[in-house]
Image (cartoon, rainbow, N blue to C red):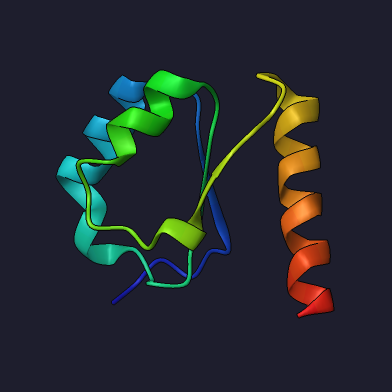
Length: 79
């Protein structure tokens, strides 16, 4: 059984590690991962994720997360 979510947001590399150590097998292959910061992004590289499903917020705050998701949703709508 998979988590039925469109996006998962991570704010730290440690959060990425802890989540994936416990729940990696439950992530739907279409779930997008939004990360804040380069270290968080680098932590995701250890896991078998589709590159198009990993997004990095340009601003490292809630506004950046929202903008990142909105940009992705617009891209999906236009595809």
